[in-house]
Amino acid sequence: MEKTTDIAILGDGLAAYAAALELKDSGCEVTIVSKAPGATALSSGAWDIAESPTRSAQDDWEKLPTIRENLSEILRRNEFHPYSVFSKGFSLPDYLKFIEEHVGRAIKELPLSMEGSVKKNQVVLNNLGTVKSTAWVQSSMIDADLRRWKEAKVLVVGIHGFSGFNSRFIRHRLLELQEGQSKQHIGFVGSFDVELPNFSHQASLTAIELAQRLDQKETFVKFGHEIVKYIDGKIYSHLLLPSILGIENTMAITEALKKITGLATAETLATPMSVPGYRLHRALQKFYQQQGLNLVTGEVSGFEGESRQVKKITIQDAEKSTQLRAKAFLLATGKYIGGGIKRERVFQESVFQLPVSVQHKQLAHQSPARFTDLNSAHSQPFLQAGIRINSFGQPLDTEGEVIFDNLFAAGSILADFDPSHERSAAGVSLISGTLAARHAKGLA
Image (cartoon, rainbow, N blue to C red; front, top):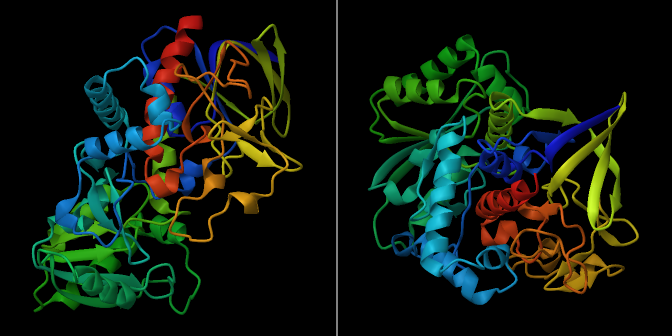
């Protein structure tokens, strides 16, 4: 089978979302090629724009730099960073404004309720008892921003049989986190665990199955009743829970808990393999469907190119093979988790066999150990491996020359940034996806 389209986007995560949003009113026919849920579905569900390269987790929450200051520092320190590459042609004030406007647009169009700011990061507790500074979180988590707390009286609620969240450990960690802060964000902390109906004596519950059960009214009513019964006669101001408050009805559940308890209620930020990541993945899929985009499921198994042009790609699924021709292609397949970069005999981009590099130095047969820092708190060089691009988002060869004129790349597959350490994954995906799509539509 052969199909044609104007622009083919390979991948369906945040970079693909930003590209689709940029192409929304362009008149271009857009096709999304989706292999399987990737890094987005496994993420915390929060959107990181930029963290300070010099800040540590122990620093005073009251002294957070602005996101603009963080971005400016990244641009100053790393000329190879995707933010730096895409900044060419902008003045610094215009570029920072562009980032703010397009992140804001992406939030507005997303069919998922999120809260935050393009001005300053929040400090949000996660389910491991550590804090993360991030720009946007799902609305069910906004009351877990510790900077907003003033002598908070916190009740941490766990669930019997769910090992992914230890309420007593979180209680102790909150008190430890308060030490060294200039303001008294936390007054006191209590904890207790709820036993959900039909889950008695289970010791291996998963976040997804808990969220699915809490979407059911019967389970949620029991859950809420147990919390209300426990807090009767006690003085709390905040209710802190694991990230399991439903998949379909998250905000309804959160608002109901606020109403029946009278407490500010929030899920903690999740670590990977999370319910919030799955919610975000579903929201992106919903957007693509709402926009009437063509969706093709399968893995790209090959391509044909001629005279610096990609002519078509081959998409293979369990039942059939599809040839997809396009005027422009946008590569947004992610890094290692999404399968965008593989290392078998050599490091290589998995669809077009593009060279993989770090700071313009190609990786080939090198051992990953050579690109690993033994200090886990440091940025890992192997996580910075990716595709070198120009300011249009076109992949470059080892000599810095464009490989295919109608091929563009965006998102975490790009070289010279460590998404997890720098906390810039969402920002880079949104800005690179937007600008790459803007140049791609000029060819369509």
